[in-house]
Length: 505
Image (tube, rainbow, N blue to C red; front, side):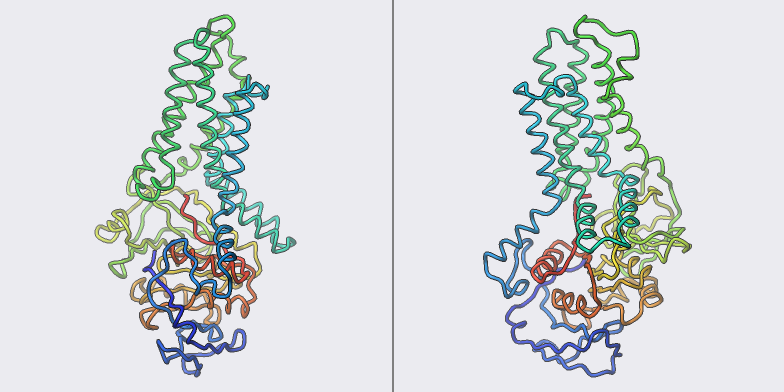
């Protein structure tokens, strides 16, 4: 997303920083005194609020997951470890742990004969978990949750409640993962139960049960983080297409399992037993929610601007709400990639996506720009969509992270933009810089050009100063893994409410 950074503790200890009064608007000619061994010049740059000055850092991040003394300078080792644990055991992992342990307890009780409901409704427990997993990744359902949260809380709820709700919305992926894994575990338990009673069970039911098990387990295993992050195409192909086959096999399993009467050893001729089965209706809703996003699939025209070899700017028709992301592909069903959406508002005629060159797909956008791409018209909500819930906030991003952050600051005058990058205007071109200067006042943004400034700023100090001067309630971070970790650790240590980037979709 952006080049890697780092800080130098020894340099930071040597630097002294003078902070101006809050929201003092000063142009580049106004003298600001900052003593630094790296640069004798003020870091004031066009669009910078001069009260938010910070010392320059060197150019590499610490290792992922490592909290340096520069990040949390005043805390002891135990406190640092506690902060790292809190950030690691976030709401996502809490949801995942709760869901899996609850289902594990159910499976153990069912195996011991102490869960009467499970004896006659194993299929419902399987499909109920899988339906919940699908809902937590469904664009329409998540947009519904965000809408309820935003319009239901933003006028009256205290900040603590809003923060808790945003954390839940951001980390519902933990429910998705927990329910998917639990559904697969219940499916194995059901299949073992069927095989144990194979003498009274029809061979077709056993066969479809085994096939369904295999397909669902492959789909679940393909979504494990190390596969998803390092073998994305394998994850996408197996999780999607094997998942679809698993859904088809589930339908067959449900129909056969509910139409074969094991007490009589024959197939039922009436449809009442099938229509009254919970499993059937779980399968119906699973299918509906899987199909809804794909029903909005369209091939749409796109204009591609290539301001530099590092970036492609895609322009689409129609305006968008802030905080949304879209998935695009060159084909109708293969290799979809998610990008943040930049728009001036719903009534705008266009919206944009910034695609930084990171892999074969994004590289092809620069080398061979398409005239059209496939996308789902139903966009999904990122955590930035919840910014409408807060009175004032900070949106900090690095490099191509501006694609996910900019709409919030364009569409709301109560959000402060901090964008750290290298040679931004030349790299990202006149379209993006034009949108920034057209819609965001100089006192409401910091554009830090690390190439002109000779290095990265101390982002944690920058956030602390902006938090105080702007009166922010929350910070949303869009950066690479190392940058995200450092800023989250620093904000947590300073008591600033921050939400970072996730890599679980």
